[in-house]
Amino acid sequence: MTNRPLAVGFDFDHTLGTDQHLERHAFGRLARELGWPVNIEEPDLRDLIERLLSGFRTAELTMERMLWGFTAALPPSANGMDRSPETLTERYREICFSLVDELVRPVEGAVECITALVDNGFRVGILTNGWSPLQERKIAKALGYFPGPVLVSESIGAYKPSAEAFRQLASALGCGASELWYVGDNPVADIDGARSYGLPAVWLADHAAPYPPGLRSPTARIDRLAALTPIVRGG
Image 1 (cartoon, rainbow, N blue to C red):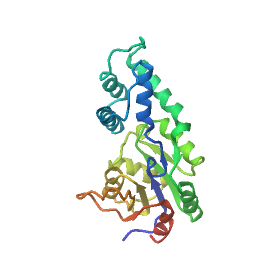
Image 2 (image 1 turned 180 degrees about the horizontal axis):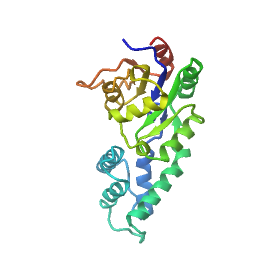
Image 3 (image 1 turned 90 degrees about the vertical axis):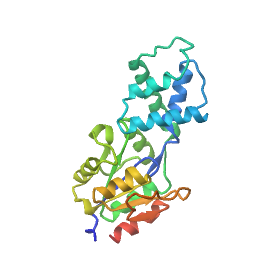
Image 4 (image 1 turned 120 degrees about the horizontal axis):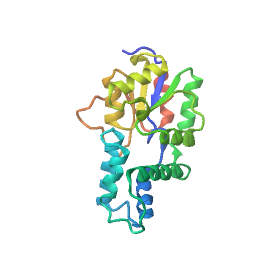
């Protein structure tokens, strides 16, 4: 039995907004600037990029090490572009920022869902893995004004599914764990992580993939954000 909820926290990527693999596209654009037009959808290269991004998003790799792992798989630059870690990191960041307007979109019903929760008296917040200021720019592009705290893992020094990340979200929203519901699409980082800290958790489900066995079950499951407010209002 949980207390009546006071607040709702959200994941961002694939929950409130989508960036159509912005960071992967940035790898492709960086490679082209180095003189090598690669196909980022080629399976081996796509898998390499996703492994590097996964390590970066969980702080196992710095951005410099991630980019080194990518460029090391390419031939020497065909146009003499500086491959120093500082230059590559600065350029990769610039490319990512330049792609925000082109690629970032809200998930259907995201703005309406947030408005409905606030109108019903709930505090709202975002806890997202990723790096600053890219995540903030993506959130602003997808949602416009967001009426609550935005916590980005790089800035707070804690990454989902760690308990510390969810503790900081609860603190930012001024409520206890049982009073804060968390909504996300990732069973491990979002749902199992939130449940392990004692938060009720709502899984925004992809019907193409079943919920993995061995993880803590979601408190509720929805397939569209329009279904969220009645669930939270019911406690």
